Image (tube, rainbow, N blue to C red):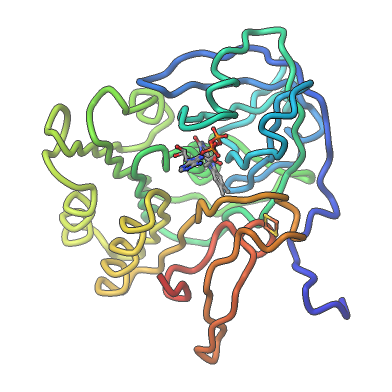
Length: 290
Ligand SMILES: Cc1cc2nc3c(=O)[nH]c(=O)nc-3n(C[C@H](O)[C@H](O)[C@H](O)COP(=O)(O)OP(=O)(O)OC[C@H]3O[C@@H](n4cnc5c(N)ncnc54)[C@H](O)[C@@H]3O)c2cc1C
Ligand code: FES
């Protein structure tokens, strides 16, 4: 591509669709899972990619909001026909979405962003803070060999062990812990108020895990920026490769507005602004300037 702003994961192949809500259920405090019937997007989306979502028939908020793929849903023949999104109610769009029942509609476009690339590893460590667990369900399914994603479906080297270090302020905010365990993930919970699991920060749980089993490990992380920065530091100290999925606010989601930029270094150590929506949201942690 001659245009220097062209990104490999540009929205050239994204689709727009109006999707029926199949279900919209509460998972935890202020946290819901919405299931959207959108076979064309479900068939091609990859773990770590996202969609932009907007309420149908309303102009407030005017712009769509980025939400990560939680998982795809298969029909009886094994074809992906729907996507699940897990969201925390924080503002206008998510408050409105939480009030819509099955049969309602939303507009969405995607798949967007680069997603997680398949990498051979023995031990995948996923570190989530707050609502940061959402990109990891499909990634775990794929790495454990339970499910395949993309069109054509991609091959991913299977991993021996998948751990989710999952930190929240309090037990009531933890969503789908048992569902992660059911698919084969070893979940290590921490809460800041001590109501479940380790009493303290998720980084303390990660520290113990890295001390006991960091050989051939790979880290992925999503959550509040300060947490991701701390995890990036722990990964560097332990010599474990780490990718972070950034949650910068986005206006267009397709590379045009530059509202989503992060400072990212190139291989010569020079930094430039990179658009999280088309050059991310997944970046090597060591390249981010926090
Ligand atoms: C790639 C990506 C994937 C994401 N995936 C998920 C996901 O899977 N699940 C999920 O829950 N979230 C996810 N997010 C975050 C989500 O997009 C945002 O939380 C989104 O802004 C919610 O939209 P909203 O309209 O409900 O909130 P907004 O109205 O956009 O508000 C967002 C935040 O800003 C604050 N705010 C809004 N207006 C003001 C104001 N005037 N003054 C001060 N503060 C204000 C709100 O209180 C809130 O904390 C993702 C983000 C990215 C970039
Ligand atoms: S959100 Fe517009 S360029 Fe990324």
